[in-house]
Amino acid sequence: MTRSPDREPMRLNRFLARAGHGSRRSVESLVTEGRVRIDGEIVRDLGRRVDPARDRVTVDGLPVSLPRDFRVYAFHKPRGIVCTLSPQGEQVGLAEFRSEAGLPARMMPVGRLDSDSSGLLLWTDDGDLAQALCRPGSEVWKRYEVFLDRAPTRPEQRK
Image 1 (cartoon, one colour):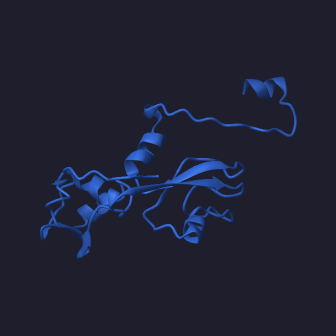
Image 2: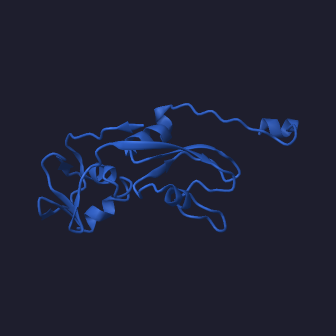
Image 3: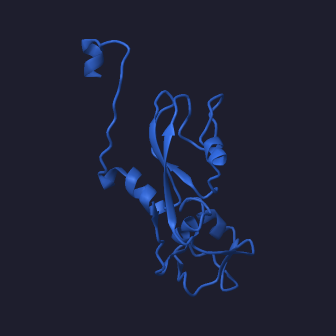
């Protein structure tokens, strides 16, 4: 599935996140560290707006642009894998799967399943979609199916 990114003026952190430089939160450090320029001028204002059609944005001197479209991939997470990019102790993280699939670094996993679970996760470079799916206030329904090796006791059912 693909969708075209917005081409209207937007906040700088949103622009950088959509361009694949990290989450909206993590790109803030790029700005505060003075690594971002708009039309040659260092920008440290997190509220600065960017017009993707007009403004020339660079990070560390390299040009930044929005992707032509966004991508979403379905992924069946196997059991024993943690839902983070980094491994947790001896448990494998998702970065290895992103690399094996040849997905670019801007692709981020969407969804949370504990390591003992398997099921659907999405990979996307569309930060707005990821936010909408994961934010509790968006009221996106999720369905979980659980199989037990035995019937739960009454106290376990109440928990």
